[in-house]
Image (cartoon, rainbow, N blue to C red; front, top):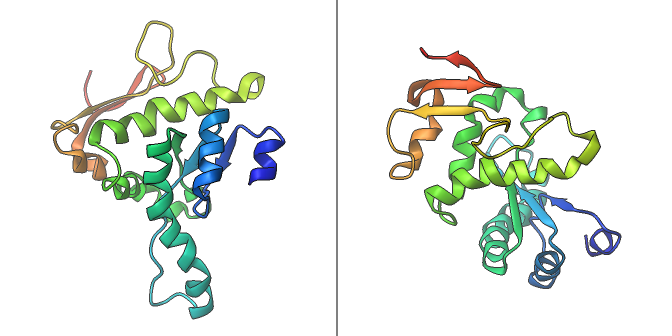
Length: 177
């Protein structure tokens, strides 16, 4: 990862095994860390795979708070592309970061901060306009939550029940206008 950083990458994906010196370098160079919280190994998992995953699972509990403390630019992602049956659980996976972030930080991480990372795509971006902000001319998907996620972040874990209105690309796709 250090070689990639020295070669000029803008983001490190996952990074569960990053050490403090590398995270400090990332913070100094303004390099993003896009991570996720993987599920602990299950009993059904092959024992060799479970053992191989163990340092990665343990590392994510170390890397997130250390990166935050050191001022690394953070984004949140998933590999659900490869496990589409988990799409409905995506927000619940974000909630696994509750030990390290406030509700406001979690919401910002998954919206504004991710949008700032996507903006690095430059001319290859599929989005024309500003992302991650609510302002005239920006691209914004808006969600009306039944309750206050700043007071109860667990509300986002059940979007089918708690998201009463969803607007995508300026069009309401769930709920009444």
